[in-house]
Image 1: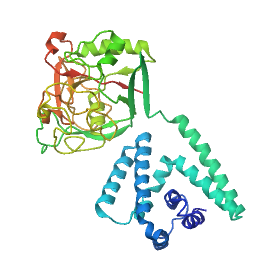
Image 2: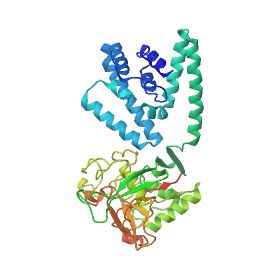
Image 3: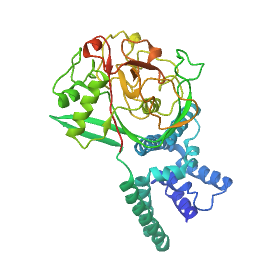
Image 4: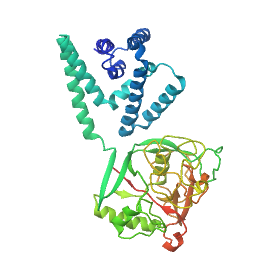
Length: 393
């Protein structure tokens, strides 16, 4: 069936380019020999002829849709693969058709909406050509896909969680997928500190994390006050202790369906890295274009979301204000760990992310900072400390 469909798609390629991608790689059926696939690709390219630029735009659109589907699905591995493919596509200048034959089975699961449209179009064209048997076969497959899609949607957590705090103030959180990563930094990383020993960490469950640092208007909506030294509704709330954050969370949980907390240190670094292994989620070095740190020469917090988000869609994970984590500060245990929570007790709580007043190396993904969690507010008056929330689905 898959081979018949692929042949039919080639005839319809000018009208339905997405079908080429959707059906060429169905690995559940007998694989198409490489030489046959290459000939079919060559035929498709020939059909396009002088419309190569249109074809190129189609492929770029597909890349964008693939990235969106992967991000919504929370598939970090697929998202990074797509980004690499896209980079190669831009750099090589080769014909984009070659990209249509890679990792298609994975994408079928992500792109069921496009797949359904492709089936509907193909069934319609079959009926026009009086291919009733083929149309009936495709209709049965379409029904199976639709049934599976409904079941998948019922199981899947929403990729974006919006919480109404009242008076038009909303809290937006993004779903971060479960996964595995190397926490800490390699000895060769510039700016590395001795407490950044690398270890493999597995986070077994997905979690929601605040798209932005908690803002002053979000704090005001729950607590009825604003402790921040530099005022602004869209600025991150600052000058708050770890205990202050716990008070906020307690009231927020009482006001909503609950489940909100500070991130563990491992969750924070995993979300910050978003699949990267470099010092920063955007690369090896930091510049004033990337984040608000002392090198930016701003000297105060800026509105949340002022810089580019990481691959998970999270903003200001580097710089702006330091962010409290749930954990006590302490050395990492040796070896691989699952869902680590840090030491059982201690005098200091963990802060992450660097700030507008810190040098760039302290804003690295692995950089730790610590402070007294129960320190009175006056000790925070000159300290750029804030936080962001997490919630388990």
